[in-house]
Image (cartoon, rainbow over all chains, first blue to last red; front, side, top):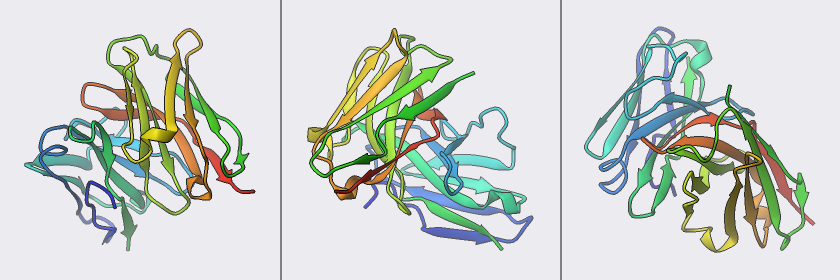
Length: 110
Length: 120
């Protein structure tokens, strides 16, 4: 049981916009920055979004992040087949005194 | 260029102690705000955070695994070592090390991962 709650799956057609949610509580999302990662099968995760809404160099502007209260979201616009993969949210938890992960969302491009 | 690489045994027996080494380059763990962390992923399951060590040698552990984990660093060798005692088949997983930026707590560079199987 993950501290952060993500939907197990999400899907969208090519070109569409899809949003993945990440729900937490005051000690974690409510008090700290959120980051997002994408993982393809058999490979290491890759940073997509950090400090709620910033993109590392090389990550397309199609990816955007937001946070409100104790929830965060990752939005992917102009969906492409190569966006398929598993997406994870991460933040620090002040009560647990360490990072916590969401359970992951498997994105399918229809 | 920042790189990290995990190394250690691919197979350990139940009750044994696992020792994993993360060798990194492109940054120094003595630089303010730099951290290295360990994350694991059982086959087909989600990522799970294990431990983190920061530039000031502060250590943080998963509450559920705290009694079994030890993280340490050798700044001169650019290495971080994770020790996990009393291994169980449920600990079979790919173990990743990653660099963490303390300001914002995000994992900006990851190693390729090392699969560790626990079996007699």
